[in-house]
Image 1 (cartoon, one colour):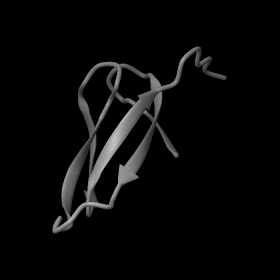
Image 2: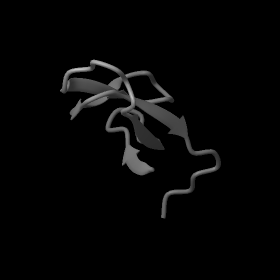
Image 3: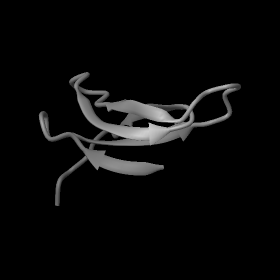
Length: 60
């Protein structure tokens, strides 16, 4: 799992890449914040990205 902080709402979340898809061409796919639903990053992938909230995150 990869971690990221949304530049808009400042919430930390994790994301995974799903790649086992038949006939999917490598293309830029969005990583969307699970808190505010904004596109955080466009990244090259052979599949798509799934994001997850991190509950009770305390910024240190």
